[in-house]
Length: 200
Image (cartoon, rainbow, N blue to C red; front, side):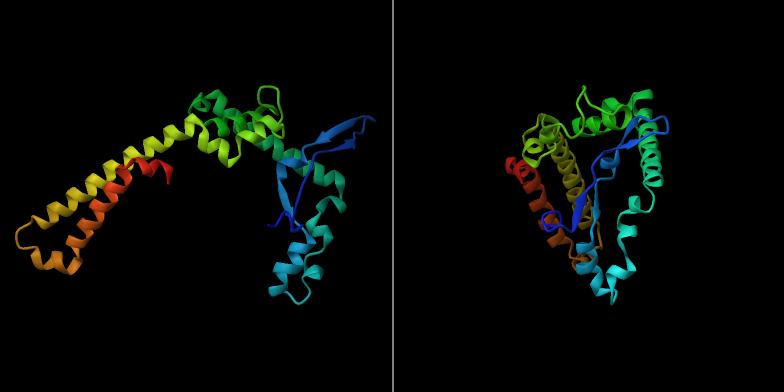
């Protein structure tokens, strides 16, 4: 695990002074995780003789070069995210987003979801694997996928059967292994049609 072993580190929001003498929050957490010197020494050592010299701390942590420039870069990213996310609200396509994507778009556009930040425990829980698998919206998507896979399977079988039914195509059908392909297609259709398919 790269995070557990210290090869990746999480960036956190931080406060910095403003020219007016106040404080402001830099949303550095939007950058997620970044590689560390442990990552460089372990993985880049296969490429460079002295990886830590090739990729030094200033590259890994640009804020040590200039905190102001780093903060400005983060601000630009956050603003670009905000403008992009707002488009989904302006044109109404937000209603088509799945619940988790809606949360992310709300945070990108407005900085919160129902008054809660993205790192709120209640929201973070919604992104866990178990929560997704148990959710109604995910189950509906699985059913939709199954229905589409069944239609595709039936289409494939019909195409193979039509090919086998063409006069004078027996030799070509044998060469292409169409009979076996039909068997495989029927087996696949049975698989995607079963109730257990939704649990796989």
